[in-house]
Length: 397
Image 1 (cartoon, rainbow, N blue to C red):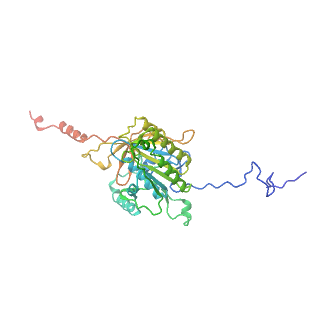
Image 2: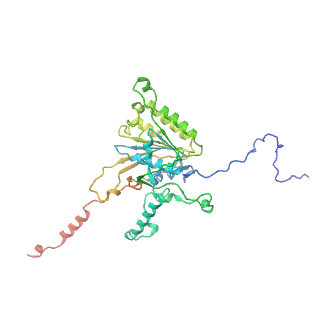
Image 3: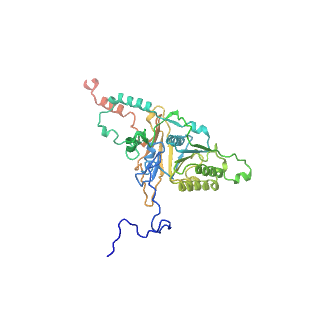
């Protein structure tokens, strides 16, 4: 009868022998938490980052943010620039979170117009103002106050709902002194102070002549080279946001940029970069539809090569409407949502409802759209009551 010592690894060679196949030679690395400004998707666990607009985060297929390694294309007809406002929110959120920012086609003037973060003093003022007006509101239970509010579920439509304190940081004051915020509130009337440590890069388009050799050269080739160099210079775990405002705009891009032989390889290369750096890279593009309608093959191919497609359709604003500040300024159409996973993994956040957006001083909000009540209804009711009353002429014979 033989005895064998317990807790002894079988088939283990001497200290200087090579590792035995099938037995790991090193301890696997311990998984760390999400990087700053990111959190796990409630759908499939993929890390997501905020677009700077809470109501837009709640629309992105239930991921409560833009998944890393994905792109979002914002289309807008007309001469307005509401899509540019979403891109500025996206850039401002990245700067506040400490992410790397790369702006294509524009210089430092574009970054100077970023909205500022709402400070603690303004939040206190807004909170005190809300307490003063609390008596004027309808007396209902606090738990029903947000009933029916768009985006009150995953992602929410309030920036404060993203502010949560880490319990580990709360117990250990040395690791964290401030609560981690996934999405911040911004003020469009004030400008963001760019910190000196911000990692912001700009890619300018090279000036091209109208000669035939220059027309054959793709204007996007230097952009791809610069993007690759910038991404390689940053740490692999640092989140990176690429912003391309007003793609194919004649004020920024040459006429040869709208050629399919130049644009489609550029979009394919951007998609390859996103898949290669799927744990740190995101992309947002705005495309004006005034010169390139959506029914053209060029725009349809751009939608196919994008992970998410959003269209903002401005509405004509009437000057005699009461409460014009709260009136919707345009309609929102989600043509494509970022869906991750071989079995799907994403559902639409709009649930078949018509959506509209409102740009106010404090936020860019997307909510359910409903027609306002018809004017003159109260007057017609009063007029009918007056017609039903008996007059002196009717009483006298």
